[in-house]
Structure formats: C-alpha cells, structure tokens
Length: 69
Image 1: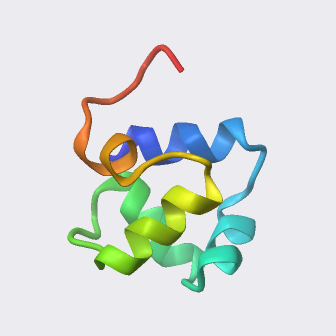
Image 2: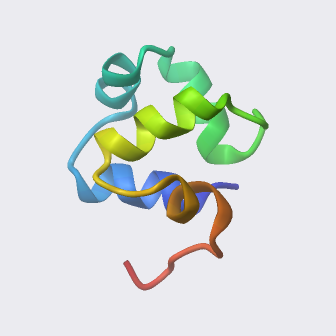
Image 3: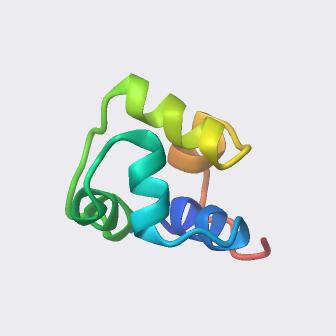
C-alpha cells in the first residue's frame, strides 16, 4: 500500500479522479497505485505525481509511510 501517495493527495484536497486527470492516467490505475495492486509506475508518471502533489518521487514512492503528515 502506498500511503504516502494517498496522504499527499488528500492533503491537496484532490480526488482520485482529479489527480488522475492531471497526470494522464485513469482513476482506477491511481487507485491501484495507492492500494499497492499496481506496481512499478513509470519514472515519468512518478515525476508527474510528485509535481502535481508538490512532493518528490523519493517521498511518495521510496520513503517509509508518513503517518504523521
């Protein structure tokens, strides 16, 4: 499960549909990324998500889950 991605999205007050549209994927795929059922997103997608969420690829995808956000 990618809690960092989900938490960052919620903190930005974005729905999965809104964020998915911003980065050019389906809301279903974004949901799968957040739940961990989809793995290995492309580098460009990780960068788009980080930019849309004012974060970094490292924080969103390679850090321990940020429960204190």
